[in-house]
Length: 67
Image (cartoon, rainbow, N blue to C red; front, side, top):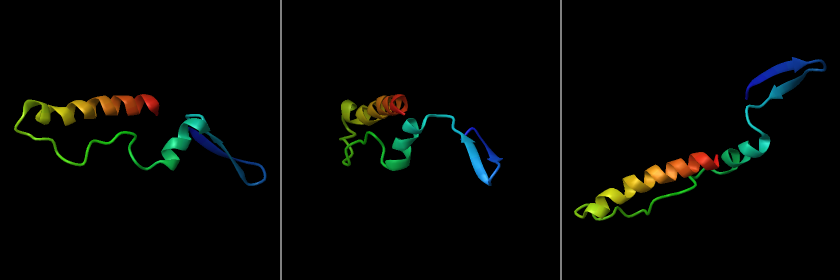
């Protein structure tokens, strides 16, 4: 919300920072857009050690762009 003001008749006038369409996803969905596999990859291999940090970085960038 950017600002709110009381108007005659006891009602409120609210100005939003974003359009209502942009806000709906955040209000409805509680889960992240992307999730990593529930099992931890084998940490003794380079790919296993690096895959989750790499995916988290890309997933967070993609999720931010979608919001």
